[in-house]
Image (cartoon, rainbow, N blue to C red):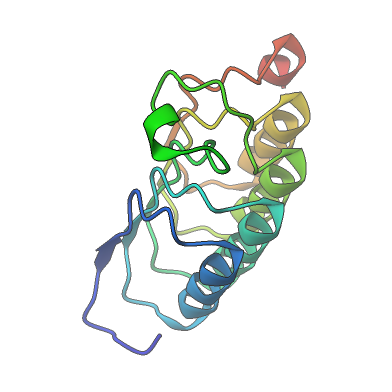
Length: 157
């Protein structure tokens, strides 16, 4: 929380991080103003509650410029079955993505977010993200590739 020298952290594929870990990370983001990038790709233990906590952390963080949340869709199945071709349902549903979108409305430091392969993003989550992007003037890059849960209504937003 108080280390002001650390500018990047990569926790990719740390499948043991559950909602409590995400909540602790979010609390750290509220305090730490040195961390500029965080990689959480493939962390499969998050649900809507963890995503909501992360969104709260983003609201008060003014340093983080890049966050990678790709492939957070596979929780609940074994490592052998969880790869890019997995058809697992996302634990982060539209409610979690709506919370993240609310965080994006307030956070004006984040310039890049990777949500690729997050199959839990549906039309409602995509609409919420679009609303967040209408207000956020800092974000210059968002990756939604392979988000197969988004249909026509979501893309229209």
